Amino acid sequence: MNTLTFTSTTVSGTVLEREFAVSGIPGVLWSPATDSGSRRAPLVLMGHGGGNHKKHPAMSGRAQRLVEGCGFHVAVIDAPAHGGRPLTEHDEQERELMTAAMASGEPVGPIVVRYNAWLAEQAVPEWQATLDALQELPEIGTDGPVGYWGINMGTAIGVPFVAAEPRIRAAVFGQHWPHLLTDHAKQITVPVEFDMQWDDEHISREHALALFEAFASTEKSLHANSGRHKELPRFEADSAVRFFARHLGVS
Amino acid sequence: MNTLTFTSTTVSGTVLEREFAVSGIPGVLWSPATDSGSRRAPLVLMGHGGGNHKKHPAMSGRAQRLVEGCGFHVAVIDAPAHGGRPLTEHDEQERELMTAAMASGEPVGPIVVRYNAWLAEQAVPEWQATLDALQELPEIGTDGPVGYWGINMGTAIGVPFVAAEPRIRAAVFGQHWPHLLTDHAKQITVPVEFDMQWDDEHISREHALALFEAFASTEKSLHANSGRHKELPRFEADSAVRFFARHLGVS
Image (cartoon, rainbow over all chains, first blue to last red; front, top):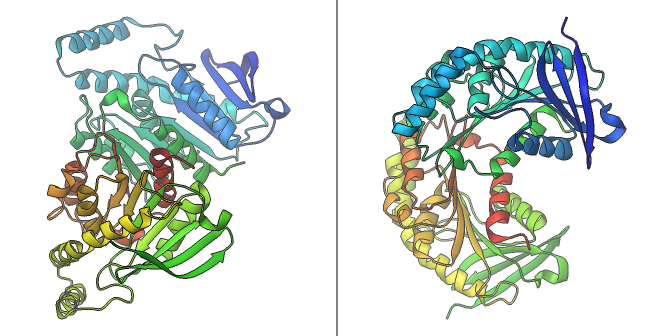
């Protein structure tokens, strides 16, 4: 059994932030500060991007929108080899290859695809253990709705996780290559919102559209915005929040 | 000079509805009922779909969202050969061909593309005269922001209209074939939100994506939703309202 231990608690405005650990995996749970976070509400799990960590501003900013806008609980864990977690020799080798490809202008996609799939193999059981433990908290419970939101590496980990996890009822993905993900995507039937950048210098339009097409969901929405890989507009975060409000229910 | 004459005024809740005519073209102007519609605010022009008219529920519903949500003025005119406007022999011939193609399962696209382009040739100067007349109203004025929103036939008319009309600062289009529109779309540089249906039985993905690609706008967003031609989700209307709020400014 995976027990969740809270390691710190802080309040910032109307948001309660509790850091936790499950079997040594560090995470953070954001909740409405009302009643010290004890009010029952839907849960959104978020996967951070490559090279980032659980409390990167993109994560805390999205969490604030979900907590303040919808009253949801939001949890993020550090991916393997991210945040304060140890790097293996293999992680260091793959990162050096990515850095070298970026520097020389070689396509970085093949390395990212392979490395992220390797990380996902470790991360999926970690997410499942974390969700088990979070659902033991009375403010979350085993029968409440759960969503998943992850772009970039958060998609590389999230697609196999959501495919394997019937507890996830809606998901926001985007900005990844289809190569090792389409077989998982074909098993996903819950509503999906998917972000791509129309002028992405790393991921071709054809590849982005192929991954969107692969989801078996009867309800799925593609949002393609002009701009390069790192220029995903801020308003897509608001759109994702509304998507979760529609599908998980505003509490 | 094209003068606008109001022909009727009604109030429904917080929305003022004024029917008008400009050079014989019938239109409707929806405004916040506050101060009898005299408060200065941005204007959104809306083009209705083929076979519909200015007060079709899709138009009045979108107008209500814009008026109540943003405090905007919203105007729709009947397209040529629509609403109470007269049909020529050519209109009747083209409509019979469309009906026959639908009944026999033949592709309806080539007829719609050709017929809508013919309607647009008449409609563009009508829209320009209507905008001239609307801007003479003190609650609209010549320097306020103006948007355009039209799907289906509203895109067939709207793309050449917005291409020709520097007064339009943002536009929502969607669900049309690219064939006679791409040259106009290439002249459009204002922000665009574009809707397509991923499983459209009339308009192929390739054609829908080609029209989106043609817009020269540095800021453009494609929203592709699962479902057939007539299944455009209601939440896209809310998204369009937020798009206009961002670009025209909530008054």
